Amino acid sequence: MRAVAARVSRADVTVDGAVTGAITEPGLLVLLGIHVDDDAAKAATMARKLHELRILRDEESCATVNAPLLVVSQFTLYGDTKKGRRPSWTQAARPEVAEPLVDAVVAGLRERGAHVETGRFGAMMAVSSVNDGPFTVLVEV
Image 1 (cartoon, rainbow, N blue to C red):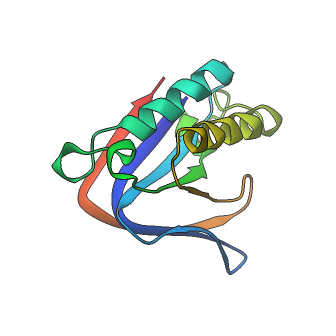
Image 2: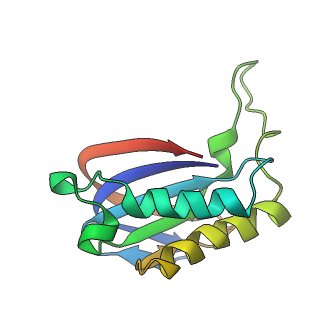
């Protein structure tokens, strides 16, 4: 499981012209990719790591300052570009596997008390954000 976590001052995701998720205060924008070998245990670990990731101002985390997270599914994080010019998606989980695991990460964050907004799985989404720093890290479990 792979996530790109960006510290943002605000972010939103829109589907068909309607906002499906937005955070209007400092927090994390998380692009989340699911690997073919991922499982529920990795989802729980990812939720904990994202919630406790100390990349907010003054080395705080969403857990310590109750900062919100906007989680957006992103299968393209497993695009392999080693050969040719067209990415291969063989390492990205199929939608029927990936969607429940994305939901499990979101549920895990919420169980920890986090305020979580989301995009819509499988939809063409427009993501807007104002990066803070910018400060962006890759999180893998």
